[in-house]
Amino acid sequence: MRNTLLEALNVRVVGTGDKTLVLAHGFGTDQSAWQRILPYFSQHNRVVLYDLVCAGSVNPDYFDFRRYTTLDAYVDDLLHILDALRVDKCAYVGHSVSAMIGILASIRRPDLFTKLVLIGASPRLSRWIRAGRDREGILGNGG
Image (cartoon, rainbow, N blue to C red; front, top):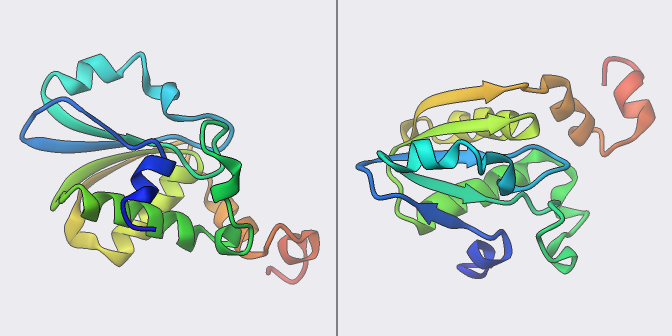
């Protein structure tokens, strides 16, 4: 899963600034969600965009339900991308579930993130993912 992950998740780097900015979309969309603001950020930043494995633009054969039952696998993907691109510091903008992915990644590697911008963060979603999408795990006993 080395650099094939970068291809599978359609990783793109746009711009040539000294600072790195990561734009991460939420469920139900792909990196095209950022297309209208990308020109403004790429003028002065190196912008990293990628698609979550569940995005329609990603080959569904890559999705492994067992691997992606928690947000940990999404965090692994993000950190692998940043390591492969040799990013040592970045600002991170995450929408919806990607806000949670950014939070978890920054807990794991706090030195990597200079700023987190969380748009429509969905903290209860992490509980839903952890519960394996099981209604009882979501609604029962604070699970």
